[in-house]
Length: 185
Image (cartoon, rainbow, N blue to C red; front, side, top):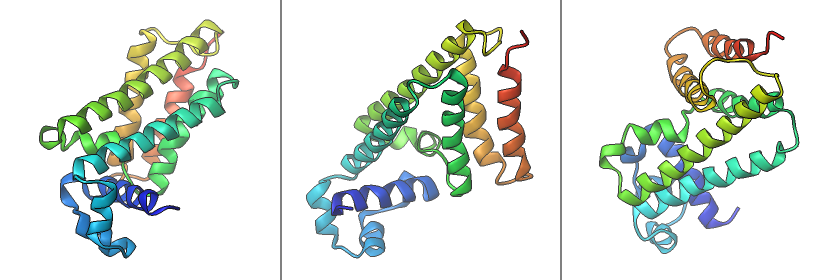
């Protein structure tokens, strides 16, 4: 891992554990053992690091989309849900959920990149649901985009809520999403 990648990785961790406004370059430098000047070399401003962190999530999402492109809509949906399962297992929150809480204080460049990432996720899941409905794999009454929004918001919320409630609530919500989508043919 390059120094730049290590900085982004640590920023991602801190954003998702503490929030964007709760960490500094000094926190990163202490954690990965470099000088803050090294961070400023790669990212002149904190907003540059925020944008790079979101771009990393966009790249991961694009990679996952390509990986499952030839799979069934159900496999694609399961891949999407697996992202949240991993987030839950790592005791983190999703980057969108974390940054959305700081939205009013974020630089416009971060807001723009976050909107791009959110649109990517919403559009991908909408496409998956549309394909699944056309193939009669999924059955739901709302529009595919509305259903995508419902699934995304459920997963983002249950990752956080299940930290306070029964750990099994995460599994229940995830399984209910799958069960309610399956076609009743």
